Image (tube, rainbow, N blue to C red):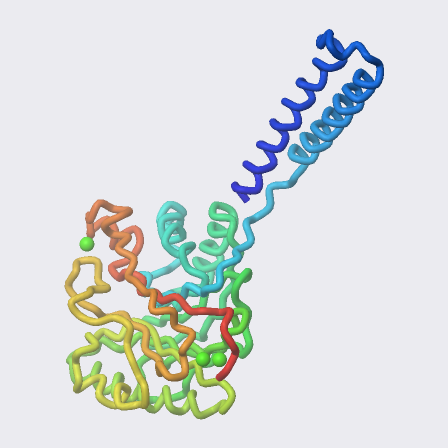
Length: 326
Ligand SMILES: [Ca+2]
Ligand SMILES: [Ca+2]
Ligand SMILES: [Ca+2]
């Protein structure tokens, strides 16, 4: 948009110079008293003037439109946004929005109500000029309920199969999954917020069970094999007693490894993105963890946690222009 505008401005300036130059041929240049040259001068003068005025009018009337993205990649994140409830202030939501708008798709963990999500979507539209929608789960958990949400930029993503909870009593909070399409890349995302509970044993038990969740969803549709499992797992990926069963599935990889950290205090790597690499060949090898606590809060982690979250988003880039092969 900016390039186009600069180009139009330059063109207008050029036409105005030519208009001014051509006046010389009509009024000032003594060597062109001859009437044909004068006519030619007049022709150029009025032509350039007309084009300049038309272009100037067009530029002034061009409505300010939201930028449409033309990227060949989908930027997908998973983010635990600490106790994301309607008690958050607009200022906090603006700071959250500033991080969220970097992504086309976010699996959100630790959401407490839908009202706050509606306010976040309004801020993303009004202050960042981006249109997001979401898939929202039913409440999960014990006395303190949470919801999961898939928040997506509508320029990039649409829903293929609406979200469902994975009905399995092994989980304190049942996993939530849905299928989306972003240009040629269709994919299913399973999001989790693994229990903290009273011991590591409880966490490991749930993570062990993720292999069954993954395989069940992977086997449900023989034509759709791009299945990703993301979220806040409350365990680091090097805990083999937790991850052994999931990791044993063919081609399974996790994108983030220690010593990288997803907690803002640089203490732990609880958030991750897992998938079968022989299927999700759309993965571009570009990935990252947004250290907003450092960039937006000068590493004042207490303020960063209160205003935004104690977790950083983890993200990866997927090619959406390749063949839709599985
Ligand atoms: Ca696919
Ligand atoms: Ca920090
Ligand atoms: Ca694929």
